[in-house]
Image (cartoon, rainbow, N blue to C red; front, side, top):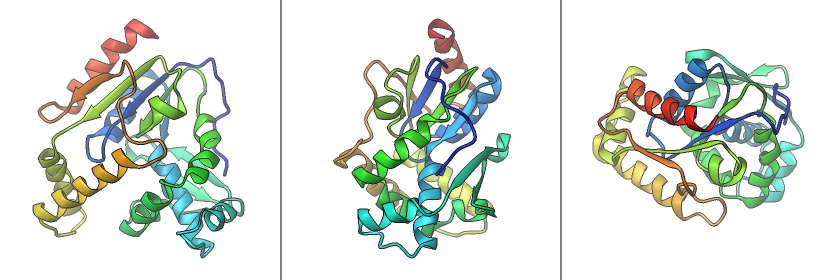
Length: 231
């Protein structure tokens, strides 16, 4: 797999880690736009890997099979501002498949595989380029960019995250219940925080922000203020 930016270890990095639904993606995009930095949506990298594995009919339960699939295709990532990221596998645009439930489920399954995480490590680090990078994920500050100039751990209550997810799904015409969403979020939190490889934890010294009662602009302002002290 390949990405568009080239690696520059000297470029400053701001990492934003946290659980699903905390607002990481929106905050990261807004922050990158405000600072003029590049953006890494690590979730898109894992979802692209999931799509590749699916298209190759890989055995999702087998690290060997998934790794073989990842060697078969190349993925490229093209940030689209507030529209997120456009992803192509070879010449095929798979952006529409990126946010499907099936892709999310497969991405979650392969993300626990140590060999897959190791294979995608250089892919993610290759996004580091001048003038700087905002990296959004779950192990950006602990594993991918441990030397980041600023590390943020962004979270929100389960109830708030469920309400945000419900609103997103409603806009897409998808009906669900709060009970179902809360259960899914709690299950995902448990899986992410207890997995053996690169579990979801706040990096040492990270700026901890609970966005439950904050707007996106308020969160971004806090990070920008902190970034001025370290970048």
